[in-house]
Image (cartoon, rainbow, N blue to C red; front, side, top):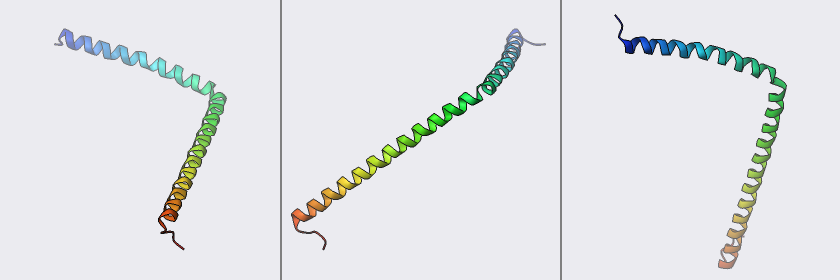
Length: 83
């Protein structure tokens, strides 16, 4: 014997599983149809990622140069510059 609560939960789970199957099938077929567009989008993303990385590396290098220059000037003022 099943209680109403058990029957309704089983019924709800069955409906949820049934509703999920067609949605995943539709999503898969849409993704396959857009392969060329997805590839172009991925290439654009990679280009943006590479440019962003180059900017970060450039900032890092400039920052290191500034720090090194400040350090050298400080040593020169103090008369402790390495010779």
